[in-house]
Length: 460
Image 1 (tube, rainbow, N blue to C red):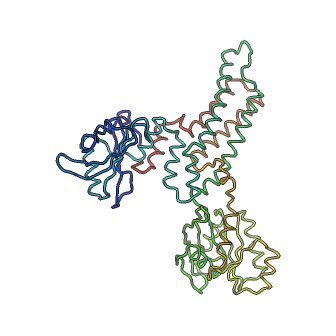
Image 2 (image 1 turned 60 degrees about the vertical axis):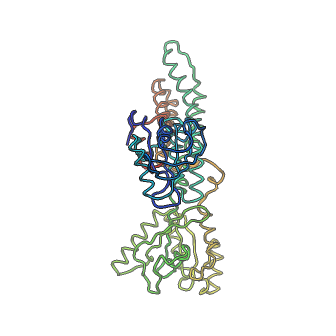
Image 3 (image 1 turned 30 degrees about the vertical axis):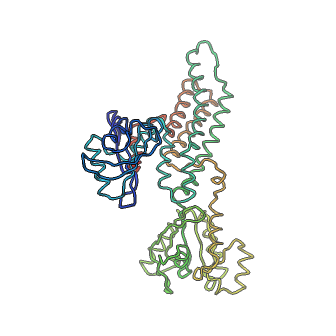
């Protein structure tokens, strides 16, 4: 999805609130002629004579026919989201009224907006850079405190300001290196190689820190895949139901009831966790159950967190130790969860407290100490970096560009070590600038913009 120059001059329209019947609906128009066109069908004040950021009551009419009583909000260029004239019409939420109003403006030459076209216009008109524009979509889809905070920080320029600062410093050295190419015969040095090395090493530290933050950013944005694993009848389904506070999984005394995955999301401390209840881990001759056990083992390898659940009334310390050794070999963070505390003997509890003091004791059936379990889960998902307000990368496109930037910067260092000629050194610096520019939008293609904004909703 790309826009021609002629299309960018159009006045566009879209419903900015969700589809369906509601108390009110907001219809948004943007373009040079937006206020003029709305004024032609609005009966109230003369909108073309009103200041920006004002709201006016009146009616929208198609000839003599009144469609609805409305409130019209004016945002006069450049003081609007798109930096164009923007009008937002608040109507009653009837789908009939919405359709009538939009059809009226389409008859008057207004074009229905494409997905993300309002935000794309804001980017093209210099309201914000590409990383900030992408954060608008993340903010709309944020479903937890953590994802909301990350998107808001990025939208307000937290991520972009770091990238811009890095790029500005590198541009200066690039220009000095390329200036030297014009004076090759004079053997002059405008850019100190020691200063360039110090800058590149400093940039690498920042870029690598941003790259490392992506694991956390991905967790914040998409949720933490958390597998509940253990023997059949350890209480995995009961625990999932207790955490969800609903009967999502089938609970039975018959071992091996869960044959496949049951998955749902839970918000814990402002972070989304995607809990996966799996088939019980055991040797089995049942073909279907065996497939479930195999899939469980695969899920455990790709999880970000494992809840190892065991039944205190049906497990001994030798078996627990054996399972813990297997989990440690997986290399995935895990929580030791001792279930059915009400059925345990005191000897086993004391042994666990001595050998595995980080064990969490619960009763999933009675919902005992679930808050303690949630606190432990949050502790293992290290959000300290995020909570201090540091920039966190949440976008796979940014991660990819940062990775390529790192490779190019390493090539610059390699060139300095090998004392390559200035033209090769300048080439590697330009590559680094190119990949940094991809993030904020200094370097774009129509295909890139089309891919990004096509994922937005129509009214944004």
